[in-house]
Image 1 (cartoon, rainbow, N blue to C red):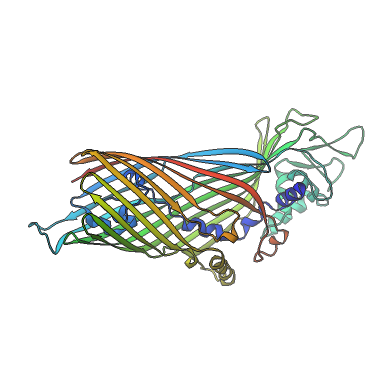
Image 2: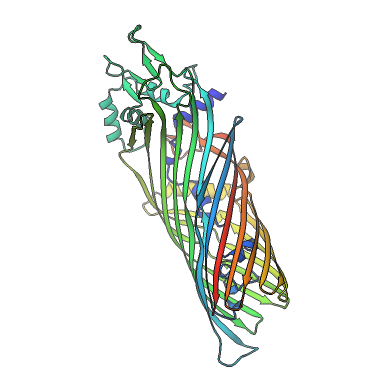
Length: 535
């Protein structure tokens, strides 16, 4: 069974990504894990009923009307994303550091010259940026260790010899013609890439019989190809992800009698995501016989780039009942315009530091629209003077309302994809809670926790994609300046699946089978630092 699984994986690793958009894209576009100011992050972003914070405005625009003065703040951060993987007892781990800018912005408060206790107390305008998603991540999945080369009827145990076998019967220029004239994915592309990357070569005296770097022709037995991979090959699936999603907001608010606070915003979303996924075979143990210039490792890879820009609107209310505050907000869908590029190829690296690369001679590019789900939040908080506060938020998101739409007339494909979204995704219920204590007026201690529900129905995923977050922080304030520090850890487990359906190459609209079982444990550590001034 292990060998059969390898055969499916090797033959079709790059196939799934060729087929335009899928549920994974919807999950990524819908991802919304607000970070923001250190005060907000230290309380797990449970700020929907509190307001008075530049990130709280993104949760509930009515929070802008809590301000009594004008304010400016910015928040740099450090993020460490760690991933551990396990597959058939093989464990590996990787991490990635990034330095995202969580938040920057300001609020202007306009109050009448004469103080009032009733009616319109103040009006407010704010311009803010808040990072809403972080895609930076490295995954190192060890799939096979000390794999030998042989054929047992189910397939080769190494991808390179699989490709070599596939090349037999084609003269190199015939493979080049296929590469240059084929406008879709063809498994023979890999044969040409391997030849151009010095991973395969034609046997001397033959024109269409190939041998790989794992093989040689014995001079004592002319014409017989011998396996020199007696020491084995290590195999990995590597993923390098980068990018962010962020929101620029223009927010307006009003304070009515210190009881009813209202706010509305128009927001502009930016989205950038890049991913390079590679299947790697490593010569970790050496070949026999060995040569002065020998293969170190090679990658067969696919690369995806997505850029998007979108618009949404938000409206919120806070009712201040002293000491209790109640808040509610509605977020419209974000209407994205997305451009996407995809290509694939091969890279080889040799121990004498020589490398060769063959990218595909064409690129798949798509332009389409995407509509994220709408969401609603309900919040409650209790403010005990200047000494303590406790806040909880509930957020509902209807992921079934997500929708792809075409710019170029591919309505049938997008209709089927939207049907999958409606069938496989669900309404989520997220919860956040935070507490702040002030033992002395100028110093605060904070803590919080959050639960993020899985957007996929349980029957469509091996493990629910639920996430948990634990946070803590401290803050220092005087009359005009404040400085806050927060730490947050977001963690979840999931199973990574690789497309393994042979018919998926030529029939992209059928339901794919999946090669499953790579267990991933994700942890994201983040430290943020807010510098702010009141005017």
